[in-house]
Image (tube, rainbow, N blue to C red; front, side, top):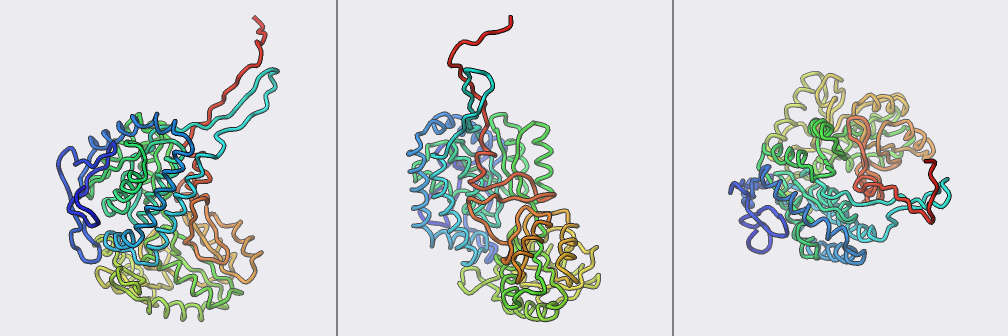
Length: 491
């Protein structure tokens, strides 16, 4: 990596505490989704580079795992201060590299600050517990130990948050990490974290980043899966990719943590406050132009409110400012790339061809796809079946909130859900019936905090991110006994 500030002409891998080129010498252009300009050349890595990074992480593991609690704490607190001091720079980088506007950019930076400051306390959490034993004279303990090298695979859509979430918890527990960011976010989802953690004092090799060109993730991912020095893998991304990764990891008996796709319902009960429900649905469906795994993909409205809700919700969607993500007024910025834009357009056109009505949007404005509300979408439409990553939401009328729960539960996915109701008790009862890993009553579904158990059920993955559960995912539990006296044996 050369120069100061960002964009930079060139971004290399970060391996063993140093910026290095790809072993092949190849690079690829990192393009802005808004302007198409080349932000810089990025190392196009492969399995050989991944192997170098794993070796560096393995070599650093012993020293980092033995670091004293106050040493780890100081590094993460210092990293938080550095991230905070670079807030404006990070927001600008998010806009340039991923099309992320100020609204969601601020959410990402705030999450990262909380993540780092909460992680600083993990070093002082109990590492085990005493266990009662029926064998006289035996003291028994369950002791948590860091596993070693953790491979982290993070996507582009919330690049700062998801790269941080994938790496900071494992690091705070004494593991070392190799991060593979998306080719769409090599800086905000990779190099930025390397800069900050390295400057904060993290030892060389404890955190490594390997980047790759479009279409070449498989080579890096397979190398991480195959390497026996990698003890855990965490992945955030699509269900098809997560399923392939889990199948390969299973053959190697390698544990994985998966947070995958969602088709998240937002249920508006008939007793909900109409204005609040519209506000919540607008944010929950269209924040970061719908490119958040938690975004509401289906809005179910009980019949008494349906007509008024549809009119006001469509009007709000149609009025959302669309354009340059660097403009603080912009709500709907660019879709991440041309392929994603074409997919959105194709799925909306298919739904309309099958009888769906467009209440707002529905016409691409390259490189953006405006906030779009569809009604009367038939079940056979692609947009009704899987996750469509963009500012498109399906509106459905139901006779009861219970009917909405039943419809939502027919989905193969179960990441997040939300319920808007004037009766919080009823909301909790409905929440208990939803097949989702996350349910918010009287809120929209786009929520996360570093300490919360984040993850889904069914085809939305398994395991939970969150610092509160990090030890469950990224430590081995060892049973240790010690005798106060010799015991007698039967032979």
